[in-house]
Length: 126
Image (cartoon, rainbow, N blue to C red; front, side):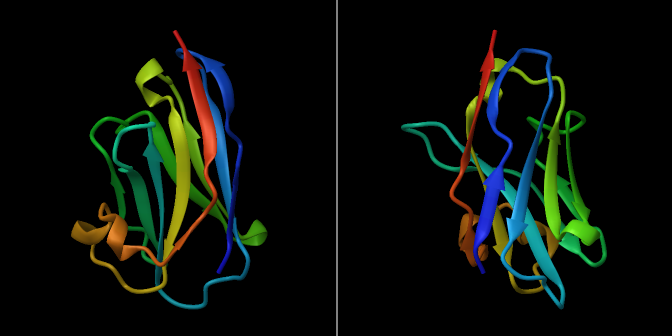
């Protein structure tokens, strides 16, 4: 499965962006789609993930209440709506896909994901 991420850009603090991730094929069974981010020189960190079907969703504490993960089945697209952006949200954002039934406590660990997108840069100016 190839993942195509897009939607990054430059936005002022307090603004919004919506990232998109399109898998190269539809998933036919339980799977988990996640978003991670990475700042140069730092480890990649978990942002959010959701299981489909079922809807179990997890957010990192740093984005809870500001970011929303969703899916448009008709477009086979996963979204990360980012509102009230802060300078510390600046990073390269990666979508990831786990083709297995992870439990929610496993969502935040990089090694549990099978496929990764190429990353899209989000820059929040203060």
